[in-house]
Amino acid sequence: MVQRKVTYRLYPTAAQLSALEHQRWVHCLLWNEALADRRRAWSERQESLGFSAQCKRLTEWRRLSVPVR
Image (cartoon, rainbow, N blue to C red):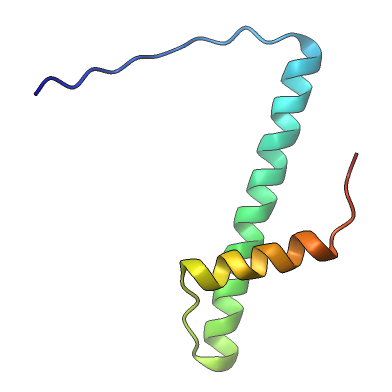
């Protein structure tokens, strides 16, 4: 079986680049908040949050948050 790698190069416009950077910032913020949530759950309750529990919390966060745009 041969595995191949394909790489695409993007040439975004200034507006697209700004939108991509915003997405990256939101993703980083979400990742760090989820990690902090896992650490908090462990330090306070010795509870290990798994993938499904984290997804449920993400749904709650979405419901509570106000859209940015």
